[in-house]
Image (tube, rainbow, N blue to C red; front, side, top):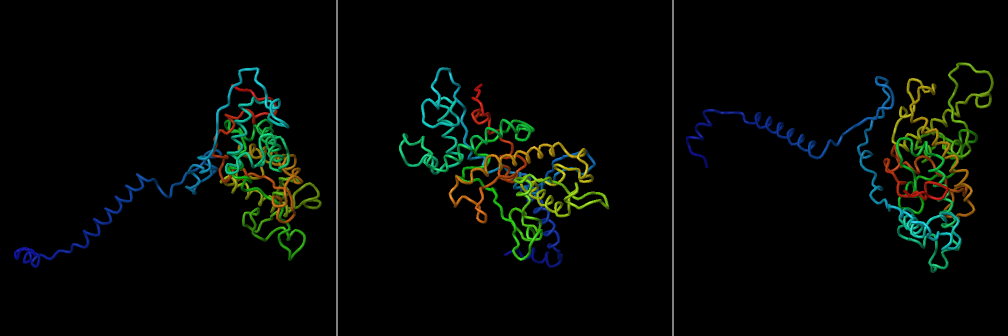
Length: 371
């Protein structure tokens, strides 16, 4: 198809075109890849959070880019600004029957909170989830366990916002409401029940470990860490730094090896609950020295005390209110909460979204103040 003179010229001047073609291809591919990274972002992107002084290696590397994206449950969060009362309005306790909590609210704000609770906890069932299929005259009845539990959960939410400000608002106002744990589900994810002993072939200490469970974070560590530390309020501690100790470990004022393993199990749970590592709270060169801990350690310590109170004062006492299908599969115990119930794998629940700003009714056990 080419002129004869061109074919003759090619025959007299043979040239290797594969080398330049490969070079051009490689350069073109690199330019194309660079254009993709610039326009779509680096798929292997990393970031870190400095938690201690420079040069100490105290930072939390973030290799999971998915976790850096917005929490997908935030998109479905429902909120509504309150109605500022003008004064003189009738209150919910004067209008409706059997209003044991939130009775100080005006009718508009009371119904506003009820609407939000259905969106946060039962968006599919709506009002019937707590009040049943009867007409409005039956809404004051306590026939369904869901209403009894919801009432107590409102009290728990108010107490958390009022009494545990140092944990939930450590950096800025964030607060909690029903959606913090429920995320549009009747039963929050990441609740827990008693499961130990988990190894029926042995007895004693060995029966609590060496089997991968959700509580042990799929490790061989003990599966009773949440039960011992966040329910029974045992002291969280690891073994002594001394090579020789007088007395009996775990009895005479210092932790045993078993206590240490259980503590590691709890710390592993904390890390996965918040998506952080050890240096988020500790100085890894001196785990033993509390003075060198980060400020986050103080926030976490308050969180431990808060969860202990939630479980023992609010959640466990509801056991007799639940139907059998809501109780634990092994010991029929009440569902309990821990860090991951709220955090869902993020450093802050809902990535620090302020969920109390529009809900002064849930921020205090007293009559709400509207501004």
